[in-house]
Image (tube, rainbow, N blue to C red; front, side, top):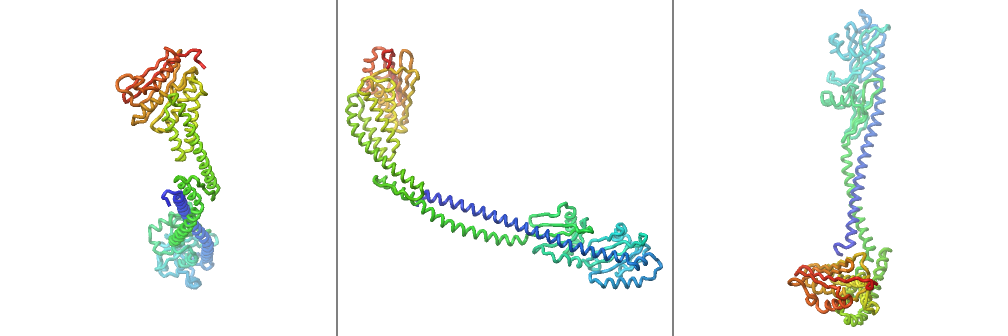
Length: 562
């Protein structure tokens, strides 16, 4: 198989396109899978956080109900209102029994406006009431009056607790003090731990000010960076934030200033992506191998007619002109085979015609000799036609054969000795065309004729010998591209004709007809002088290794015009 054969090129191009398509499809599939995974994680996180927020709302409602019930308990109100009330022991017992009702209750404290303290926490029992009244939980409860106050988690007795407080009011809405009870943060954790946010996902609670209420990592409460991050989340106007490797969703909890935040990471995707990548690569390689084998088999099958046609051409080139291509395969290949066979048939016809022309040329040769036509021109032209025919250059064979036929038709001129100037120029044009086909790049020519040239009569075959002389005695002897220019101008009452070549020229200044070609030039000069009389002139100008110019001055009269 040739390196640059059609089969190799098509196989290379198609496999390259297939490779690019597989890469593109695999990349799109991988990218789309990544997007779908992230969308799925984001959707699951949003749904689970929203659902968990409802449970926390119920939990907060229970806390508010509990602290509100305590603050409105008649015995508690009476104790806070009456300074001389001796029910401290009964209230303490009531508090103890209340604390035992829920394992997550840590402590309960009552601070009256006059500074009395009842607490299940012995540390608070002996604390300074003024200091307690200055703390955040007491002041916020007084500010919000009827509404319970939720406070962020804090470390108390080696345990993280949540606090909720509410002002104690009399029947006349007089402030009597504040009741506070503390709950183990694990109670809130029970509402959050059921959340499934992937392998590394987690949820936490902050307030609207960015302070952390609950976080599964206790070290976060002492981390300044985490606190600042929580503040950024609280201040963000967006409920969802998508990062490169994480997704954050937050939702406000009704009836309090808490915000539930869920964080999902895409670490699981890294593991899945590696597996997916290997699967995509494996499928791509397998598909490439299978498609490559199938493509090679199909191309071999469909390109076999081309190979058969090529083999037939090679045999014809070796001389087996009787062979013909077998039309098979696709319709285009069948048409190509038909055209090739038609070309061979046409070539055979041209060869037959060429042989006929060769036989006919012998007759023309005899007449040409009598008219001073060089028989070597005819031989060389026929050799050129045969050479072109052997190389299957049918187009040029037809062109040069037509030109040769036109050449001899004009030369014969129906047996007449006089010919019009236009036909004489056409005769020269056909001659130069034939010579150009023979010499190819070595010979170029140009014929320039004024539009107002009178179509006079003159002896036939007077310009062709001059052009022939320029080729054989001028251009043929040089080693550079040759050029012939024929110019016909009308300057009343004369027609001026110039034939110029860039050949070897002549040594010294001036030239003679003998030096320029001998008998042929002299024959032309004598016939023109005899026909046009003394007013006719033939002049020469030549420079060695540069150019040769022949000038004809022909008088014009009415009787000379056609």
